[in-house]
Amino acid sequence: MAIWNRAAIAKLCWDLTQKEDKLWIKWIHAYYLKDQNEWQKRDQPSWMIRRIMNAKLIVDQCQPRQGKGVIKHIYDYLRGEKIKPEWRCLVFKNPARPKACFTLWILMNRKLATVDRLTKWGMTLDRGCVMCKRAEESMEHLFIQCHYAEAIWERLLRWINVHNNMPKSWTEFIQWCVKNGKGKTARAQMFKGILAEGVYGLWSERNKRIFEEKSSLIDEVVKRIAYITIARFPNSITNVIKHRHI
Image 1 (spheres, rainbow, N blue to C red):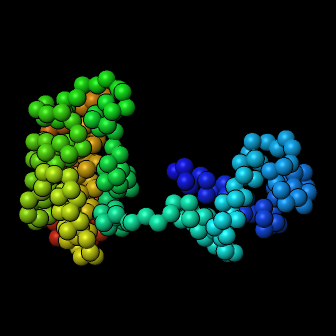
Image 2: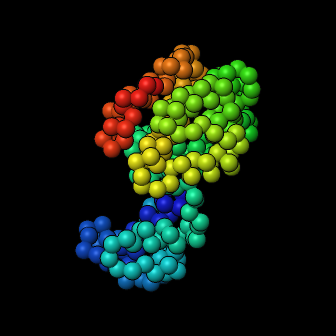
């Protein structure tokens, strides 16, 4: 997000250099720039104008092209060369709800605010897992090792006819998900949709137990996910699974 904000400010600076026919650009040129090349030497501009002017170095370095996609060009320059994660196929074109896909994306980036992460930030919390009460909460435990999660995944995977050999380590779990969710087949679409809704269902249940002191049975969570799947997913997927016993 910080890189995107810098790119957005640099895009405004690029607009100034192009002198596009916009009122705010004409106003800045008239009151601040006055055909001066050394923008930073102008006295007493507002903090907003200073931020835009200070981005001129970025614009000069990346030299975005005319036309559409200027901000993307600047953003890619600031971000640098990054290897695209292999798990991106699990998030893009996923038939699950946007909030479920977003939760899955945060999980794959290992950024969910689980207890083990919060304690690293200095917070004093009960480290126990609220789902099974048998171990300390972590991303690995909450989603792939917890007995409550295991029971939910077992029923969901059986419902979509995927062999339940889910690994218990994080690296192997990612590889297993990519193997089952990669491609354009109905089976792959069905898997990654169930994966996203399952992750969101577990995360929601965890939060409900912590903040609302309410809990749901495994059967309730599974049937809720199944209902959402049948109601939202494309017919090519729902026609295959809607008659199966959950």
